[in-house]
Length: 131
Ligand SMILES: [Fe+2]
Image 1: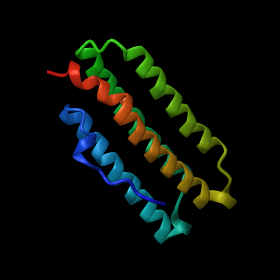
Image 2 (image 1 turned 120 degrees about the vertical axis):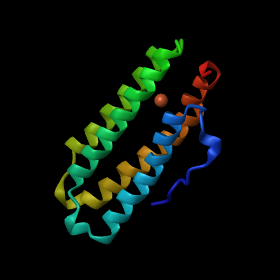
Image 3 (image 1 turned 90 degrees about the horizontal axis):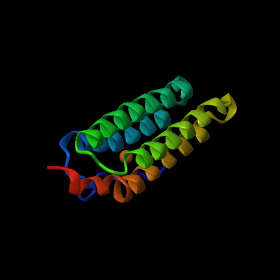
Image 4 (image 1 turned 135 degrees about the vertical axis):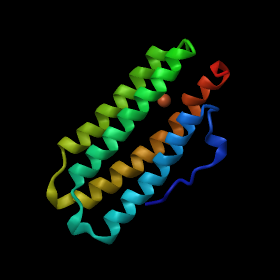
């Protein structure tokens, strides 16, 4: 898969959010590399679960910051987060062992692309509310 490298242009101006976003891109690369090096040891459901836990933790942290700074579009933003989270869960539910590496690659690629788009369009809107 093609990796998206982190760039400081993706920063929204809050340290916690920016560090979590940056770690996220590094984590996707690491997960994909592990998958490529030893497919037999890969437990796809565990990897997707790990990804989901990280994403949910990040969304909660981001929403808490939005709430602190009275970001007006918090409800719409939360709905977008929830929708994405449900999509990851759907991948996990539909996973069959014969297509593990293909599905996992697809999940990681989609997640990475979704995040980049989400950061640049939705998360960036938070910038002007941060002090
Ligand atoms: Fe967000």
